[in-house]
Structure formats: C-alpha cells, structure tokens
Image (cartoon, rainbow, N blue to C red; front, side):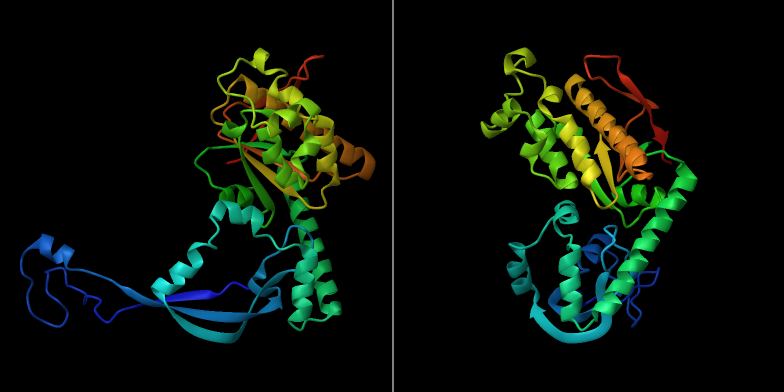
Length: 323
C-alpha cells in the first residue's frame, strides 16, 4: 500500500526574524535586504517512510464500482528512513504522472477483495462493506437526480478542475475520465481515448478502414479529408460505442475538453453525445433506470449541441450549466 512520506529539515533552518529585521535570539541584521533573502536556506536530508496496514473503510473513500472499500488503517507496521537522493533515484523510474495514475492506478474490486482477505478481514465483513458501498452509491445518484432531474449532459467553465466538477455533480468518488478533442485528429485517435473509459479495445470501436489507418500511423493532418478517405466520424462504429456504454457496471463521467473544436472534432463530439443519449434511452426502456455515463463539456459555451448522422435531420441535445 501507499506509504506516508515525511521530510525532515536540517538544523540550519534560519530563525524567525521580527518585522524590524532582528532575529528572535537577539542581534541586528546586516541591513542588506538582498543578502538576507539569499542567505535563507532550507535543506532536506532524508525521507521517513511509515507503512500502514490495510483495512476496510480505511480513509473513508467510497469506490464508484460498488466493490469493497480499501484503505490504510491507523496501525503502523514498519518505519524506515532513507537518504533523500537514494529515494529519488529509486522512484524516478516508477513514478506515474497524476493524470495517468487516475486511470492506471485503480485497483479492481476482485483484487481489493483478495488484498483485504490477506490483511485479515473476513468474507462476511467484506460482503457487508460491499453492500453498504452499493447503497451509498445508489443514494448519491438519487440525490443527484433530485438536483439535476434526468440531466446527464453538462457544460462547465474551462478553468474548473476534475475534482471540482465531480463534487458539483454530487459524485466526488465517481470515476472521471478526462478526454481532449484537440487529440481527435482521426477516428483511431478518438477511439483510443474512448477505449479506456469504456473498458474495451480500441479496435472494437473502429471500422475496418479506420483500423487499418491506425495501424499505418494515422492520416497526415495536412492531407485533405476527401483524399484521406472517409471522414473521422464515419470511421467510428457508433453502435459499438453505445453497446460498450450499456455494458458498463459502474457510473462514469466523461470530462471532455472542447474549448477549441474544428468541423471534424465537432462532428465526433456531437455523435459521441448522441451515443450517450442512446445508452440512456436503452437503460430506461430495458432496465427502468438511468444510464451509466454522464458527460461534462469542459469549456463549451453553447446551451445546445447537435449530433449529425448525415442521413437525417441532426439530433439536438440541451446542455445544462454546471456552476
């Protein structure tokens, strides 16, 4: 499990100065502000690593996948001290960027269950906690429905971060997947971004022509659309995309950065929104409940968005402000 890190400052930390420039221990300053500023130093020598045991409900988090909650207990199992430079050298190769960790750092429910069993929890305790988590998530979505009705499509200012948006939606523990339309230069690139949140292989979302394009490294962005073959939105198997959304077992929120869109990415974005709408309709008709996917358009300014399917009149969807 994750360790708690504590960095110790050296004994040479400067003493606090009064507003008149004198140190607490007496004496006067040199009178040179530049020298005073440059003379202040803080150094770190080692990292204190404290390892905690694992426990159910440790940390109080509620997983959005309805599996057992896993966290740290108050029991300390080990304490060590490591030289700071040696610690950084060792961690440099294994450190994961924050944005990537949000997607890759998730521990699946079955793995959490095995880890809890190994830490001494009983199956009865794990099942009881799992039932409590499922009830909490259901209560949260009911509360969100009271606030937002059946709304699942929102827009928010571009300066708001992921944690703020999920909290405003009433789902701070929900799995939020950040997408960016500026990276959708082809159907392959769009499918690659969608595959992670939808838990499918990118190839299942692509037509044969678009999959071949992806295997060849994609279309040159300077090449005209008609020379490159089918448009990007035609390269996505949107029915497969809707099916993948229906197959999800947990609620997810797609946070899509779309402050800057061109004609091609706008077409992809509109059809993606249309797929989410179809997944919600299917869930309501077949299961009598709302779908598993909500969408926040990050930086979107309009109160509507269209899904153009080319062969008929475009579908129009209302975008609710989230502020």
